[in-house]
Image 1: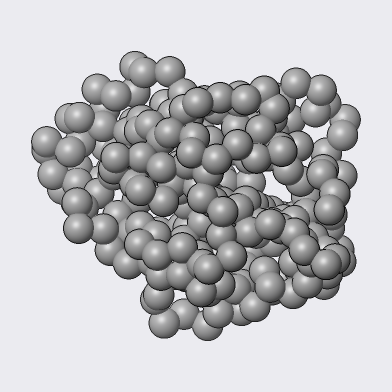
Image 2: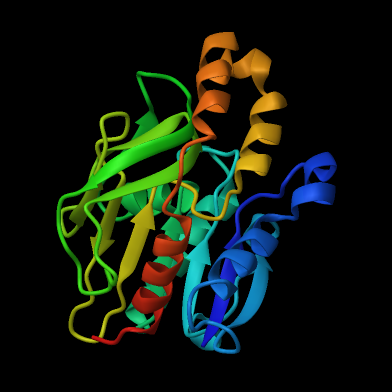
Amino acid sequence: MRVGILRADAVKPELARHHGDYPDMFRTLLRAAPGAAGRLVFEDYDVCRGELPPPEACDGYLITGSRHSVYDDLPWIGALAGFTGDAMAAGRRVVGICFGHQLIAHFFGGETRRAERGWCVGVHGARIVERRPWMAPPADELRLLASHQDQVVRLPPAAVPFAAGDTCPHAGFELPASRGRGAALTLQGHPEFTPAYARALMDTRVDVLGAEVHRAGVASLAEPTSQELVAAWLIRFLESEG
């Protein structure tokens, strides 16, 4: 399976030297999933620089996180949203993580805006409120690292929400496939982040986060996450048909 990673930002150079860039993180995450070895080929596209392939170039696509907001007046954001629609129209499946989650919501009939609670960092939980066919093995809860100050406040009309949290009510949703059209799976949390990278990122943002939010976020890093489970789910979703 050929997966196109649509990179919507770059890790700061001083952090990338130790933790890799976003495509590196996703390759590590997905290749470590049970049975994934040798099944995945990745292509990277820097969408901030206008790198968008023909929709049929890959079997599925993954939109990364970003420091930008989906409502920023940047030409590449609208182009990425248009490409996402074209890819789904071509029968491809698309995964949206953090910024990707917000972009798919915002440009497919929902709304994303700045969260009233402010920054959300560290490990956060979400309840599974709807079982989906790709959820194998099943779970009742997800726990993922977070790093965002925007949130989806209204879902697209066609969305099926599957994860909801106290700090993030719309933590995950699916746009189901229909009549030859591909599907989208989105998550607000970051399954690709490691605790070490999350800590390093928070440490660069102490002044922005505030001491209390930073302290709580760092303390939460001792908690387990659902990283391996979500990796298996993403692969099952990308490989599924219909």
